[in-house]
Amino acid sequence: MGRMDELPEYAERVLQVAELIPPGRVMTYGDVAEWLGEAGPRQVGRVMALYGGGVPWWRVVRSDGVLLPGHELRALERYRAEGTPLRGASRATEGHLPRLDMKRARWDGVGAQSDEAHI
Image 1 (cartoon, one colour):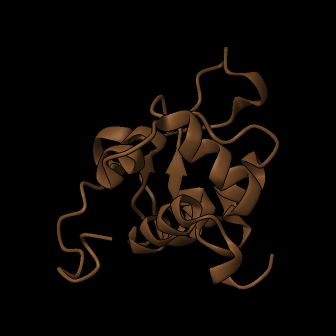
Image 2 (cartoon, helix red, strand yellow):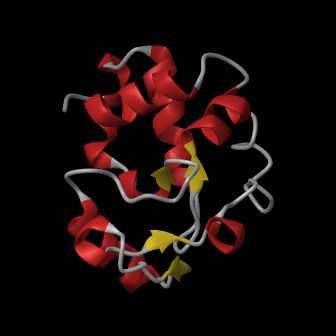
């Protein structure tokens, strides 16, 4: 990835929001879109897929709490290290992977620095 100023403006703003999310907490793609007040969850997901490697990508998640396909084990390692709330996997779950406990893990932006809160 190049320098931040080479990114499209929207992508840069999505990544800035991702960096605000505290360890152990998550925001959904839709939460990030709503925070920025433009575009939607799909655009946020695309930005994260293309440019998210340099930010805490594991903190921007699907609203159902399912771990990011193809990155489940890397994400799980991060969640466990950060103490992110997880729900145990049911026996029916493929690979018996846990999900995020969205009720407890979801972050609403409270506590963000006021100057950063309006990116």
